[in-house]
Image (cartoon, rainbow, N blue to C red):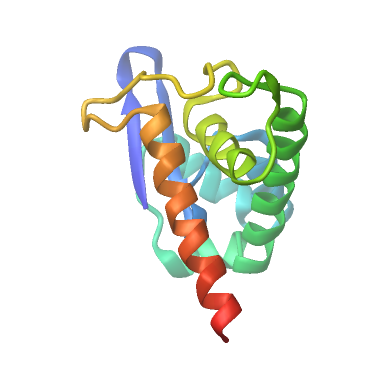
Length: 146
């Protein structure tokens, strides 16, 4: 888990759980608030405190993390299906759907497809999409061999 605070605007966010879900995402907050003690954990995260893994799992168990993440993926899939792949001029299909979903997950809904927009670590939107697609393809190959 990491957390990042912008003191000038009194804003902190933390990457939570197995998917690094942001503590500021409304669906993450709603899931945590439903658990006993969840509001207190969110208050601590909002203050920039680190919460231990056992504390986090008590209010945001892995099954709940899975549910939130899969709901986010479904939303990303719907968004991606409504966009045009600039390489074909047609809707995204096949592996390009996975790549584009990853780009949106990393860069946000408004990020252009295959954008060369990057971070200080030199990873770009396009690069992140490519990395996720490569991992997905490896996973898919392993599953076929089992």
